[in-house]
Image (tube, rainbow, N blue to C red; front, side, top):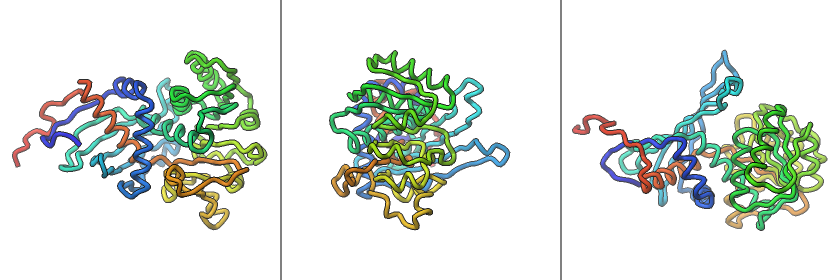
Length: 340
């Protein structure tokens, strides 16, 4: 992966953002390659660890350790905090760092600002799913977004930046100011179609053929299955919006079956309601590899739990680009005396 002489560097958020948006196609290829490596057993992706606080039940910090073998030979861990009250403080809800470890020595060699990495691996995952589940020609009549925060902004930018075209974008958030802000951003990015901020999520569900859920919902709030009749593709990024009945009425594609069947996701609730996992069509990588197929005439729901391998793969890709461009912030003598 990198020089075996132990050194340590940092990559700041501005550099991460610049390098990612300079090459969105490269970002998607990296995420796709990580999915394929995971499907073929060339990764280690343990269960995430949740640090919770009894006195602050809405807050949490999650550790996502992972290892990528194959051409990467790198390990790492994303440490991401979610504090919803931060929004009222005027700062983002989530903050994160990513540590990368050399596959040969185990020494950590980099720390990267990871809130952008986390958002971008989610957005890249969504874009890959849209390509393979909805339209190979990157077109949808109406893109609907429910939950209009940071993840939603990155999803739209990645879709637009990789050639997707829409006649209309419909937005809903319980905080209308957030939806209006995203609408303004979308217009600023040069989108020429109609942008509509709706008063209910039903107005998004009824009209959209490609739907993104990026909320902070803790329990299902979409109970009615009627919107599935038009066979939309649903990118269920926030994982807990759909009732078990809605999930069971659709094709279901996940990133990893074992991981997504946990933490109270809609998919786990559907497993509990049905008594089996037979409703899961397969993983996105299996679909990409032609190992499973979608039932025609049904809506499709993509539920990605969010694998640590994606953060590590994207972080390693960014690190290499930062190193090549001289953008690493090196920390001299970080490890102190190396003479054992």
